[in-house]
Amino acid sequence: MTTIHASRRATLAAIAAAAVCCMASPAAQAADSDTVTIMVGGINKIIYLPAKLAESLGYFKDEGLKVELQSQPAGVDAENQLIAGAVQGVVGFYDHTIDLQAKGKEIEAIAVFCKVPGEVELVSAKAAAAGFKSMADAKGKTLGVTGLGSSTEFLTRYLVDKQGVASKDYSLLPVGAGNSFIAGMKQDRIQAGMTTEPTVSQMLKTGDAQVLVDMRSEEGTKAALGGLYPAASLYVRNEWAASHKEQAAKLARAFGKTMQYISSHSAEEIAEKMPKDYYGNDKELYVAALKASLPMYTKDGKMPEGGPETVLKVLSAYKPNVKSAHIDLAKTYSNAYLSAK
Image (cartoon, rainbow, N blue to C red; front, top):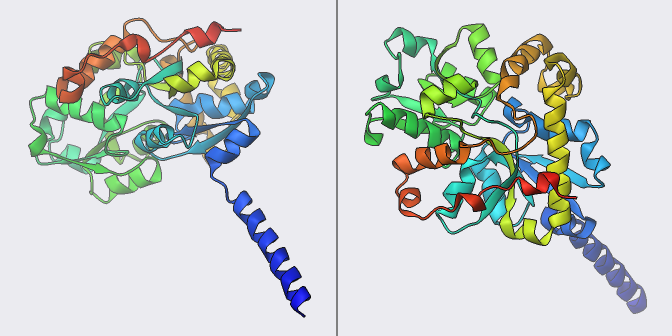
């Protein structure tokens, strides 16, 4: 009996050990399998569409890469995962690279998807009817952002402060994106908020919201921010890119090809490559939202000239740590990986 019990204990120990191996962290699994894990700040947002499209088109496989895409509702959460080393890359807003450098962290964008934020400040129909007509009317209001510390917070604060409304005179509420954003506005927990396509088109179609500030186009972005504001991009830790030059170059090239595909195909053709759950029962609305968004994308994944300077100006306007820091913009992005062999 003793021998049987000993054998059983050994078997159980082996099973437990196997279970521990299976429960290894995603980062450990990624390291073991050479999988590159990329966290996306809301994978079904049209501004981040290139991530899923690159996968659907097989461009990662063409480069010999194994890529796992994960999703977080707010870019700031994805950023935290990157700093912790749990993921190798993030599809999020370029402005995080500048904000993080001011905090002593070196992050660089190695492929840029959008020349402009693609963000829209919507005001609820109820609040608009009550006189909320511009960001100057934000006093006493609650404004929705995806998350505190997110790019939507950066941009919202800048737009409100630019109108002379003090930060103590309005509130910010993290409401995420998509359905949670829509619910927040319908329930009047927020009177206005910043979001992207396809949520913008959904709310305009139902009449639940109106546009206050439109940063889906170059013209609208220049009017709001004073220049191009490169936004959605793939960013990685500088030290990871330096020690994984081949993988970084393959990722950049895959996204460069994706941006070329977007610039040479129609919204209908692109939508056909996306998962059906991205547009649900209203593919027509999704295509319309995508069509309205196509001008915001870069054609080659490269950083638009003058863009980093605009982002630095916006962040410096209300973030003391960025204003006081010596920001080296050359360390916040690189076009070199796009052409590396």
